[in-house]
Image (cartoon, rainbow, N blue to C red; front, side, top):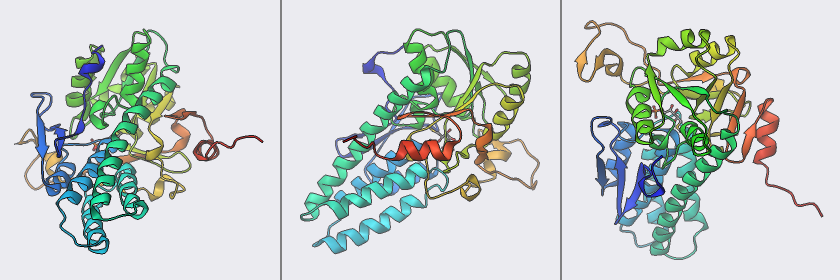
Length: 355
Ligand code: MRU
């Protein structure tokens, strides 16, 4: 395992700039973009230079803090109006991951809560954004500790897409659970679905696990059922972009397929996600907005057309796995078992101190 000095930090703030690992360059090259204009930050979310639900939330928070520094306003009202417009641009960047909206709301609440002048608000926004980044890593580590207990020494775990350090500020959710189990001395073998159409599993999950010397084997999405039939998979762990109150979970397209085949083969299917991924406003997954991305992601690979010219294309970026296919949801507050609505509600409520 890499030491604490070598952790992958996907999103950071350095000398007044937003620093992001350029995920479109991986695995060929580990490179960073340094952004000084909030518009570039919003564009990096749209074009998936940065991706993964917690990572885009934290990036938007830094983007708002960066934008705030550049606003010249004589009073709070003018400042707040401008920042609200900028926040709307970030909200429009990607629709499915609720962490994006959650992080933006937290930033906007800071403005309301901060007394004082515009300079005080600007400082408070930076502080809040950095706090969000710190909390993300902390909650991933806590999730890792809770989830690691579900894995046994020698397990083979299938994951879909990338819910790792690259999808968060650092450490990861689903891959954080695997990292934590490995830190406990367990031998874990990971199977990474390639994750068509953007190959986050093959490009990002495989790269990131290799950095930590965690054994990883890539498979085409179509191979998972056959591996399960041959008893090669002991558990599935995936991340989430939005979880409804009843536990229905939106995650990368193809996650639902994996959940169905895991259920058929009686293999536990775990979702690892922070509480910021739970959307208490949605009773079920039917209300989760699903992003539809450009058809070029389907028709081309690395810029080369592989589909016939003019063919009709569907490209939803996410699907919704019904709660009944989910064995447990691993959060930073503990592992939640079905029925999820009651259990999530109980865990969300602040702890009451007995008199
Ligand atoms: O389109 P992406 O790459 O942003 O989708 C990412 C996923 O679906 C992840 O599994 C999810 O955001 C969880 S990340 C901890």
